[in-house]
Length: 76
Image (cartoon, rainbow, N blue to C red; front, side, top):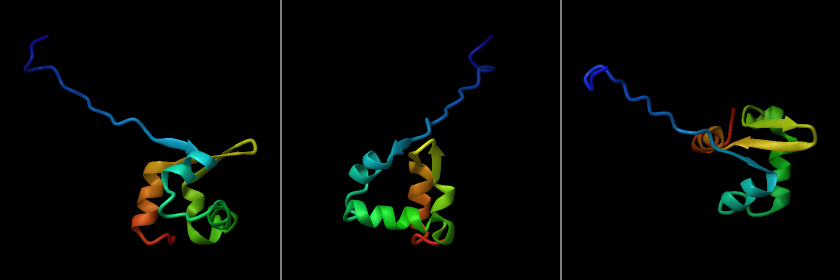
């Protein structure tokens, strides 16, 4: 295989965080734990359900999708 034929595949790893790490990372957006809980409770109406995965009782946030959700104004 020559260098010309080699393809460099660059993939960025997905970023995930649980509830408390998301709160620590986005402390400037969600001012308190209760504010993030409010958004999670109403996830089906505000579009946050596309960001959250549930692993048993644990909430896992896809931080890349959360960035997109915040950029769109936090709406569906």
